[in-house]
Image (cartoon, rainbow, N blue to C red; front, side):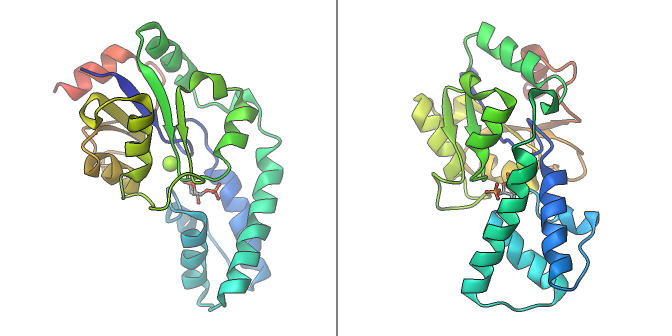
Length: 217
Ligand code: BG6
Ligand code: MG
C-alpha cells in the first residue's frame, strides 16, 4: 500500500534550474569562463558546494575554501533575487491537481529536497500548507544518492520506506529513493532515469491511479 508521496522540489514541483543557470553562469563569467546550458545539466540534484566544485572543474580553476564559500554565497544572493520574484503561476502543470488528489485519498505529502532555499520557494509558490513534512538541505548532512533526505521524510510521517513513493527528476535522486527502499517515479526522460520504477514527462494528466498502475506493472 501507498501511504505517502515524497517530492523532490527543483525540477519536479517547479523549474528552478533556469534561475540556478543564470546565477552560476554570471559567476563563471566573472571568473573568466563560459558556462553552458549543457554544463548546467550536471548540477541538477547536486548540492550548492558540489555544484561550485563542478563549475570550477569546467572552468579549470582552483580556489581556496574561503573563496569558494564566498562565491557560493554570492551565487545564492543572485539566485534569491529570481526566487523572490516567483509566483504560484510557476508551479509545474498538474502538480497541484495531483496534490489535491493525494489529499482527497488521505495520502501524506512530504518534501525531500537538497535545497537550502526550499522553504522560501514553497512560500513563494504558496504550497507550504500542502506538506505534512518538509526535509530540505538545512536538515541533512548526506547528499543524494544517500537516502537520508527521504528516510527522514518517511520517519517524520511515521511510515516505512516500503509505503512511500518518491518523485524525482535527477539520477542521484532516483538512486537515493531506491537506496532507501522506496519506489520511485521519475519525472523526465526514461533514458536518464532508467533506475526509476517508471518515468513520466510531468504531472499533466497524472493521478493516483496513474501512479498505482505504473508501479504495479
Ligand atoms: C537541488 C537542485 O534541488 O538543490 C540543485 O537540483 C541545487 O541544482 C541544490 O544546487 C541546492 O540548492 P540551493 O538552493 O541550496 O543552492
Ligand atoms: Mg530535482
